[in-house]
Image 1 (spheres, rainbow, N blue to C red):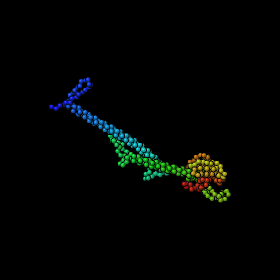
Image 2 (cartoon, helix red, strand yellow):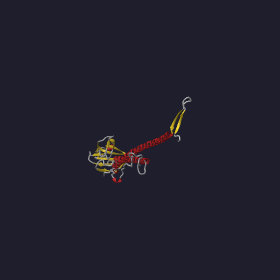
Image 3 (cartoon, rainbow, N blue to C red):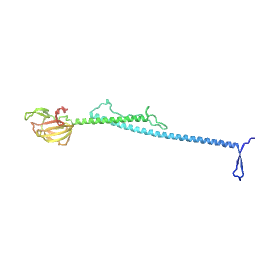
Image 4 (cartoon, rainbow, N blue to C red):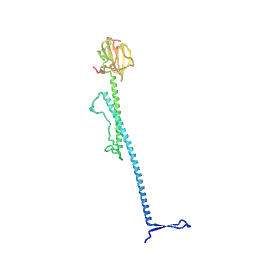
Length: 304
């Protein structure tokens, strides 16, 4: 019968007794198999560990990418809100311009509103973000928003310039002496005439408007009183500076109700008609001068 065991000899020392142990072969084979199984388990466990570690690293990278994408989308939403606010200001400027010019034409459809691109956040359990549009990623959308923001800013600046221009025109219109300072009979027009005292042909630099003594005289436009007092043959005289080189003069006044430095508005009573100075009867001598040169007041008056 074949030997079914192994003999294990242990020689501990030259003086010690040699020990012999008999180990059945089946135990040896079982031990070897167990060691192989353990080694296999160790290898499998190590491979699993590295696989889990790799997955954990990939998950960490994905989380960081998702956080970065969330941050980008938050920034994009904030920029969309900013653009919406800018375009709202554009619309308000448009309304101001319409009010200044008395323009009301809804068919022109000039008002603008913010665009709203489709931005979709990931649902729970998603590892990636869905596309913002059918063909754009966050970077492309950000580029579009840069262009839209720049265009909105340019439009706002353009409307600000238009508003400044129309405000200037409004101020100019308010400063233009476009109404009669008083109502009455025009007894002497602008241009050459015979002087009633000398009978010489002279230049008459304004309009003579006759009326009842003490009749109200009103400012034909906004301005500032720059002179109020006596001036030779014109008697009581007042001068208003309307800006833009435009001044008006009022002569032969009975009373003056404003003083130098006062601001006046169109339609405000500033004096009363009189007969002071060299005058043949109660009337107003009214002049309009532009950059010091006399102009025919009729070409400024709109309410004939």
